[in-house]
Each structure stands twice: as C-alpha cells, then as structure tokens.
Length: 138
Image 1 (cartoon, rainbow, N blue to C red):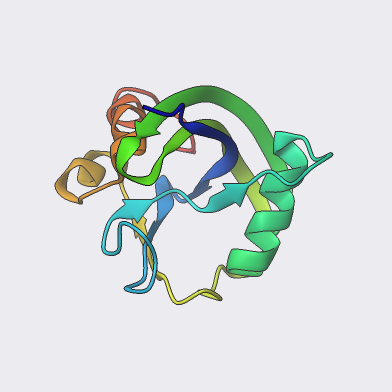
Image 2: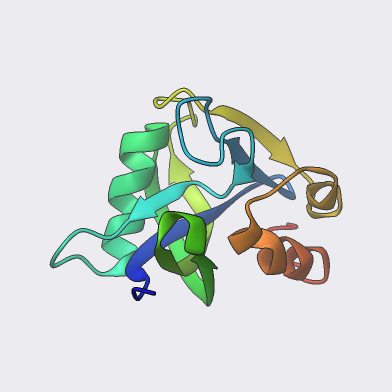
C-alpha cells in the first residue's frame, strides 16, 4: 500500500451576524453535495494566511480584512489517496459580498444548525467545536 499524498488547505470560518458561511460542493467536484468551509490548497511558497486570502478572493470575491488562526485538523481520504491538513481561521471582517464563483451553493448558518447538514468528514470536529464556542456572535 502506498503512502497517502499530503496536502495543506486553508479554510475560513467566515462570520456575519452570529452565522458562518457554508459552501456546498458542486456536482462536478469530489464529494459533491457535501458542505464545507470555503478555502483551498496552499500553493508553493504560500503560508496558510496567504492561501486563505487568495482562495476567498478567487472563490467568493471577498477581501479578508481580519482573520485569526484557530486550529488545525487532519483527515485521511484513502479513496483519493490523500492526507489533508486543514488550517482553520476565523474571518471576522471582510470587504465585499460573498458570491459563488465556482458553482457552489452558499448559505449563512448558525453553529447549532451545522450538525443538520452533511459536512465533509474532515470538517466534523470543527462543526462540533463551533457549537460549543462563542466565536463571531457579536
């Protein structure tokens, strides 16, 4: 059995009025229909904060103003040969109105609602943690 290929991903928990932005993966992507936190892979020479800013601009057409690193999570997707290390940031200020630029459905949800949606397996612990914390509820 070959080793899993490791990738690093930056993901944003983007807050507005006590809700965070969730994105549903479009039909043409792996894990179509699952919900996730917006973000994407780090490119060579990029740190996680730089990748987050670039990805959110590309994916949602927003500019990150205030983001703070929250935690890392790791998950294996053996069916895809991947080990994913996710770097999660709380995004509490941004310019622009998030819009779907990659065919994903976007939805603002309360942390307590998140467990009713099918989130990616890599995000399960994050969804649970958000229910028990008070981030973004100002």
